[in-house]
Amino acid sequence: MFIEKEDLGSTIYDYQIDQITEGDEGKVDQAINAAVEEAKSYLTPNINNKKWLDGRHLYDVENIFNKTGTDRHTLIVRQCATMAKWYLAELCNADFIYEKAKERYDRAVTWFTKVAKGEINVSTLPLLPRDEDTAGEKQPFEMGSRAKFNHDY
Image (cartoon, rainbow, N blue to C red):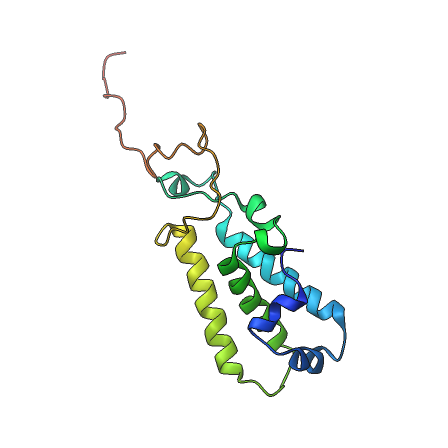
């Protein structure tokens, strides 16, 4: 897994996790997996959509999320932990502030969206190699006209 239960300690206390999940590790794993999948969905380029070929950075998502331990990007780990906390918060009425969890989740989603759109560049994340499908030289739209109409048959 890209993040573990121990990584959630930067966003939520262990006793809160245990109280929310009633000791069910499966619920923690489900929240973590959902957060990682959501993060991946923001960073995965859609090369079938021409707007992704506008020259923005295309991140190597599999490389980013296959890392473990200290090889992981710390900011990505932190954002994923924040998102996992939100998924856990949906289950509970524990003693942490729901609005604060929601606000931090929204900030994490906004951050991932800005990275995906190229508004924020994370220089330490691996990029996909550019090839004819991801060259970035294509424009997000094409211009042209129809062939000239001719009345001659």
